[in-house]
Image 1 (tube, rainbow, N blue to C red):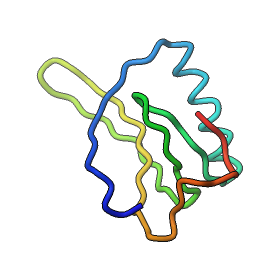
Image 2: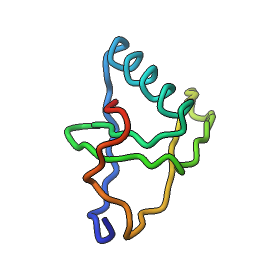
Image 3: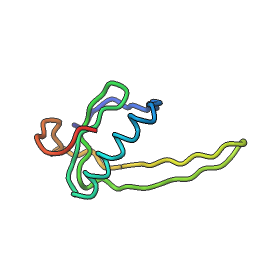
Length: 87
C-alpha cells in the first residue's frame, strides 16, 4: 500500500456512533487482531501491530484528548484481509 496519497481528516460522529466504534475497537485491541475501520468515507485496515497512544493537549482555553493508533505502511500490508472487525 505504499505510495498512498496523504490524508488528514477529522470527522465528528454522534455519541452513539462513537460508542459503537470504541466498543468494536476495544474488542479488536483486546484480541490482538487487525481490523477494518471506515472514517469519513474511506475504509482501511489497522494491523494488530499498531501502537496505541493517548494524548492530552491544553491551550487557548481548550483541552483535547486524542486516542491514536499508529503504524508503518509496509509492502506486505494488504487491503484485502478477511480477518478483523469493521469499526
